[in-house]
Image (cartoon, rainbow, N blue to C red; front, top):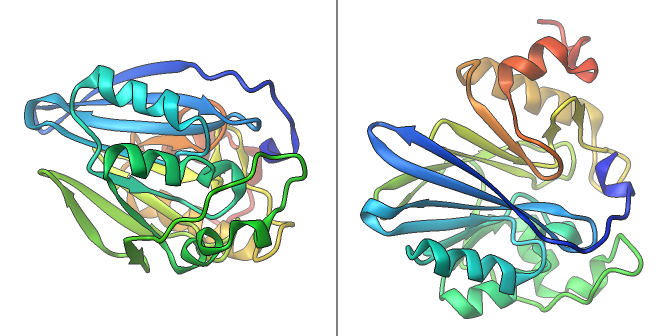
Length: 234
């Protein structure tokens, strides 16, 4: 699974421009930290709305992208509490003043991150108090851009997926051609399979999927070609 592989700590941009309801939404993907987890900046220049999903490391790189976009960052959304997805939370929140949204699981981890070290050799993580604890089902308005939080347990108990601009930010739930590992504390294959199936049945086939590692994809592509989803009983 992607988290078991170590990568060089090199960050880069992959930029995609979307159009949703005639409003220009741009998404910048940055691979950050030693495990090269995907961090996403989603913003709308027209209304100066911006938010980040999973600042897993290199907050200075993410903040540079925010400054280049010129929209600021009003919110930080976290999919789950593993080190490679929360490493830059404290630094980025301090730089931007953004509110941090996450599950109760992430709140616990960020309170004392040294107690939840799963991957040896990772940089130390600064503690941070989550501003808004989410259960799933909440709709958050970021200056006119609506973000829907969805409870998607499986990779971890408190995993969340975020839906915005016809796109799902799935963390380590669903990847291009693969799924998240379930052998870590709180993982459950049955829960993960149910979460993925619910997303595929709920959202249109052309919905973009932006995962926590690797390339983007669509729900239709994963339903038809992902070998881990063939036995979900469609």
